[in-house]
Image 1 (cartoon, helix red, strand yellow):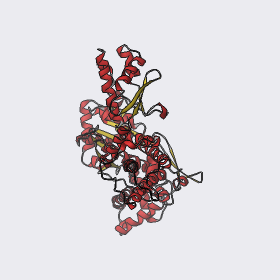
Image 2 (cartoon, rainbow, N blue to C red):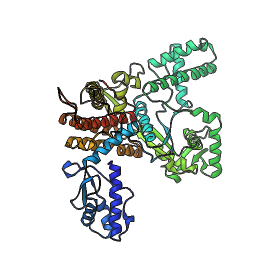
Image 3 (tube, one colour):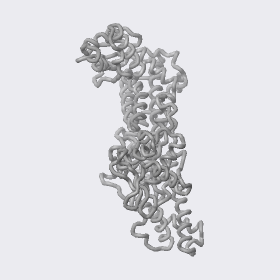
Image 4 (cartoon, helix red, strand yellow):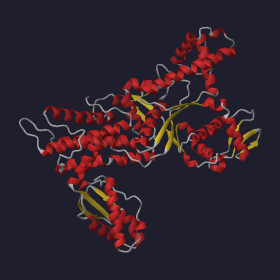
Length: 556
């Protein structure tokens, strides 16, 4: 019995209890909360539904809890239902019900943890979107890990996700980038507000090799070549780095296309006609305060040039025209004002502000030998994705960056992530998977039939009665709820923290309950039940790691 099935059972039983007394069943919550008590002596699960409902229907919580516990007692799959405290109901599963959960994992395999609550929802997930003026820094690297994981999680719960990279190939930062490349090619110092680092010299040399006569061209023509070739080369490096990091995109959207196609001009004219823009101080302003923003925004500057938000407006309109129901933006710590700005933009377009969600990621710092690592050998002023991967590898980098809420700054301890010990979270989880895979290989070497790929129907899973077995089964049973919650709250770190809890439950089980026969011992029904439990744990670990884009090694 899964926690969700238990929740359904509790709700339907509570409805029967209320109906039998002529009380309003509409007082019941749509979803009953089922939680694991902190103290396992209190039961396998507990519910507070009596506390939630009793006052609404004119009963005391204890009175309702007792009626519910009596009705649940003896139900198939439950060993006991007892009232505790002011009105909690503690529940213990029958061992055969626990075993049924193991069987479900064996049957569902890689689909275990998937759901359909977001079925049909078209999601545009925009993340990273680093300017094509240099390698991806640590903030962008965090979004590459978290954004890709979020896309996997939303997909697992039924959404149709399009991963999109907004390519900022227009604006002043590109002009500074071009000037920096030209200066490097000529052997002069970059402009004061330009870009430095070895990568600029490398790119400039590549441009000259691709266009040998570029430095002899007139200034305007020369700069256009450096712009076209330099930006393309930089962007190819970015895409290659992301791919090697395990993050790929479905769409690369060019900001410049919004201007070149006339989309920016068209949407601004629409807003002028609707009265959502007004003219003041020589500029055009959006009435964004009417839609919850902290101030009205300049959309067309007094010199007639569009402000940056003009492209944002056209970009959101474009996303909606492509049929996306939800547009998620994952932005850096310096973009907090974009939450109100983008929601106001949706409202100004006559849309529901809730079609826009903005996630803000905080800073990432590297630490080695207890000291911050501040400089990249290649980029000069920032630490890059490549620097982190070179230091700890793709798996450790992705796991560590996805392990924390994006609301919090992260100090990545390079020394810790290089350790092959339980102190290193990604090693701890991957080692649990490798240990489980090794267990199945050892079973095969003993001539035992495989558990993986079967439905467990020939195995007596009711034999899983050891307390550590129960802990492991219940931890496995939490996985679908954890994935659903991570999707709902857009919080991939919940998956990582869960995997560490599952790895811990497995290690404790393995230390307390021997799985394989030794010496001349024969395999028993308990042997096969435990092998099935171990395969369910391995599958769940593999599924969770896959949601984070981290490998599940069979050997370490």
